[in-house]
Length: 182
Image (tube, rainbow, N blue to C red; front, side, top):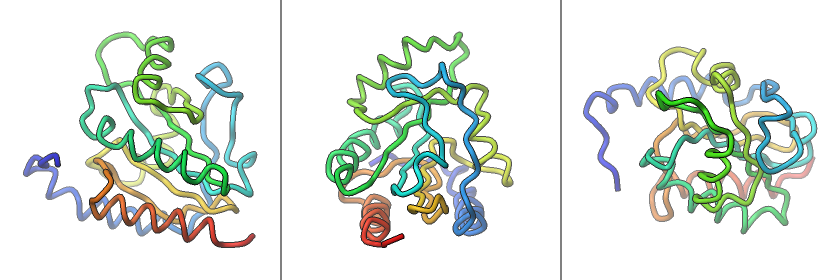
């Protein structure tokens, strides 16, 4: 398990307060251009209505939280896709180097992602969904939408791995939403 820097521990209560403000709201459209979809046709919130949608912002394999959470994302996709879960990964570039879409595709493959992955250039969607709502400690946030496109659960960043409370909470939320009827 990763230990959090002490400074981040003081930011966590604010992240959870921000989460409470967003849960129950309709998910805004994402701002991802057609060519930035790496391994699937372009998707949209509207097009995914009828599915439970898990969206995870991630960055390069050097991010310990992204690396630690990748197996859980893959397991959720494998276990629940047939029941109506759509996992979507949004890459947001943090490095000082130039963004290389081919590299993003390689990193997604290295993480084993078999679900749609897109590049969130300039963090446009991440800002709209998360960062513009007060100060945040994390950018590797996850949102869970119900079949109507309403935000129902937010993991405000960091990691979730099988066996930890954040993973169990997210899995319960997925199962609850999959059991709901439109």
